[in-house]
Image (tube, rainbow, N blue to C red; front, side):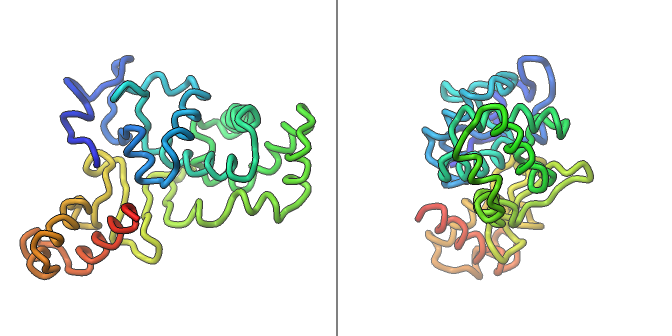
Length: 232
């Protein structure tokens, strides 16, 4: 479930520092878990490891995630699944943010090429034996930065992720922080995938739903497929 605009921004679309939150996407931990297929506990741990996120609102008792946080969660999950410790991930995030001049380094295209060097530096400083295996084995590090982590991502000229097409082989479903508060929608019609999928479930007809919402029937089919994958 994606929050409504009202619940996203409460009384205003600004963070505690008075900066606009429009266009950054705002996700609760359960929302982020649903979209990334990463366990909520792992997401909460990552949020607790990165104090820089305190500038975002607190929703349902936890810090909210921005769109680029959402993308980074997938990378952090891959690191943890391959046995990289939280301390090392945090150090990598800090070092990468400094080197790449970006507060969300794991969601940048440059991390794909600079990540191994960053972890090599951390290995040298901490003596982490696991990292020694990873950085000396191109295969090992490539496994962590699996191509699927970058699949469907579009980047800005400065290499930061700006939108995500999460349905493999399709450009009709997009998560774009500048559209519908970052909830998944069909492209280019910008109708939420959840609405289309529920409408098909009720009506039992892709064609009727497509006519009602004035979208391409293929967009409806892709919306249904995407929502079914999220629910699986």
